[in-house]
Image 1 (cartoon, rainbow, N blue to C red):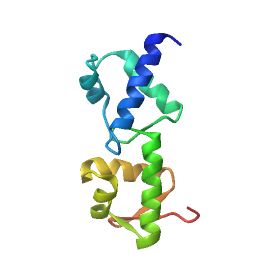
Image 2 (tube, rainbow, N blue to C red):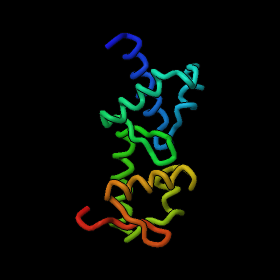
Image 3 (cartoon, rainbow, N blue to C red):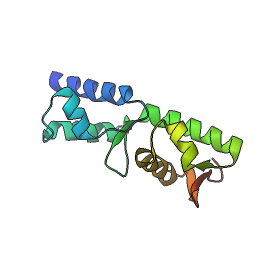
Image 4 (tube, one colour):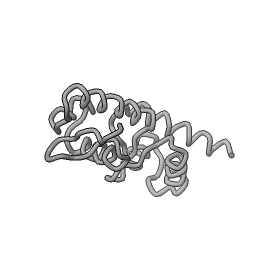
Length: 128
């Protein structure tokens, strides 16, 4: 792997970690790191990190670090076990963001089988 590739991987992973629970777009990454948003190597690097389970791609095309997603899973599982469900309103506090950015994260948790939507809330799937 080339030095530039390693540097870019390091930049992306640090940016993802610094973003915390807030998902980010390729454009946002490019803006903060002064890269051109059409740079194919950035898209390729981010997709590579997704394939290596270091980043998670959400349904809205944004990304979040796998480490932060694992923390979210723990928080969501704990909340639902204590309260029976997780409402959209409650998720705003747990995910530390509004509805528009939170819904793709909740949808991801549904997709991987951790939760399922029941009305306007999420519950744990059996066996989780």
